[in-house]
Image (cartoon, rainbow, N blue to C red):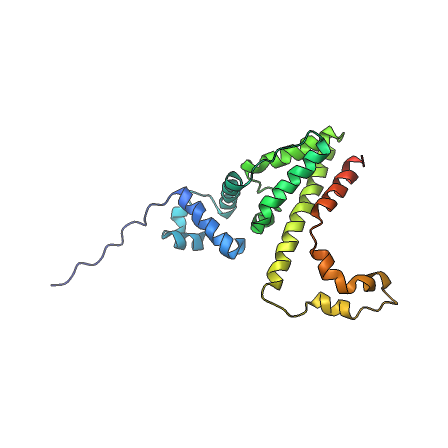
Length: 219
């Protein structure tokens, strides 16, 4: 007697929380570029069309991921009374949070993809800059400079770490620096053999304080 054919039925019901959790797992393991609606649907055992009932597109999904991460990980630090130090402490706190997950800094450089849960970071820096005497317009420009410095530092260090992971061969820069002519480039030649060591040092706070001093005037 022939067996009845299996019915396909509907894809399993999924929740927004499950979608966010699966998306986070993909980007943590493989990066933002590997996150697509088709890949996500496959991972949750559904279809791309079913996902669109929960998220409009990949951009909205990334915003939801940012909000989820900020709600779980980003903690507003205890802030000092001095506005200049408040700026430094706030920027350092967001850098510490994002350094553990560099893909977020890459996504945030799109500017408009800013999760609502992280807006305290922007508010505290604007507040500190205005209290130091900047106009609201200049405070926005100052915030942008601080954010670009912070995000750039995170992204560059993460990219360098990925390139060097498991590869002991000399880098292109090391090969070039080994052949520097001291007569042509004396300053660079003097530090060429220590360049990797010096640039690997964490001088973020020194640079941040110098940037803030330049924006609001040295104390």
